[in-house]
Length: 67
View 1 (cartoon, rainbow, N blue to C red):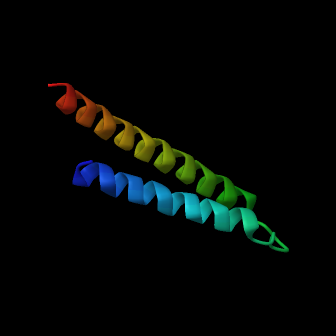
View 2 (cartoon, helix red, strand yellow; view 1 turned 45 degrees about the vertical axis):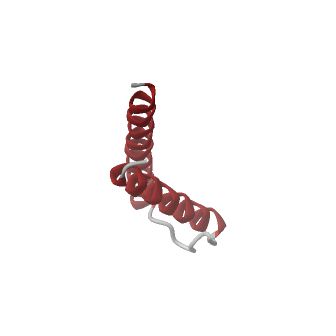
């Protein structure tokens, strides 16, 4: 995998770890749900972009291997 794909995969793993931490965290007494939803939107958008980056990298590698 090229360095761009490796960096995207590393970032994707870091986001997954953050998501695990969020899932295990206690709910605050007074939650700001607007901020929570902004955070979820950011998580979704970043995760999607990283998955696309990794997928494109893997396709480039496949195409190079076929050539």
